[in-house]
Length: 208
Image 1 (spheres, rainbow, N blue to C red):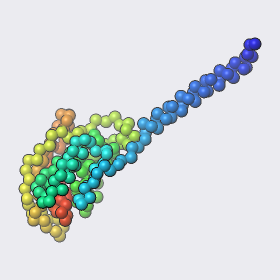
Image 2: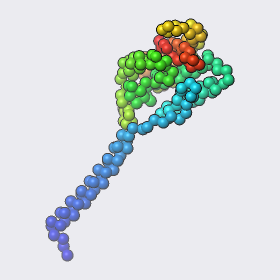
Image 3: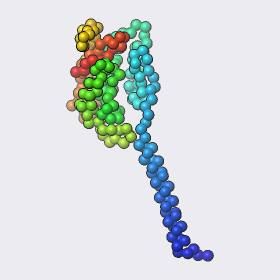
Image 4: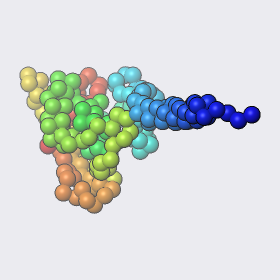
């Protein structure tokens, strides 16, 4: 028995619609799967000092975090070693833009003194982070710098006054670094960091 012409058309349309529907479904799932915002989780903390390690950090930063943890777990913490390690971590985290999700995702904030943090963030977003495109859906196509070698050039104990307070055992750390891509050789590659004591914790109060 031959199908009538209208019946053939109806079946053909049904098959076409079914194919389009399946395609749309998988296209929808693929698009939104790639557009999901990954939730950041905290892997570890150094509670006494308020430092936390997020799973979004690179393997290199994670290694530095555990090196810092080892320094701070000693019965007598060597403040010079402490200052050197957080200087290294700050430089790597702040000046590596490739891992940042947006211009507001400023690195190194764990080490900045709370009282100057708001000003620090504003300055960072208006300068070094100004042109970082959003990557919250992992779809960014922008080349950004990654810090490579970091050298602690000098560490000196000094006296530093901030506001009404003076720390006679503050630290001035001079650091230089390179980037993995030589195309960023005209970017900042050296800095001086000043750390003061906030209780037992060393906090960054000046970056120049």
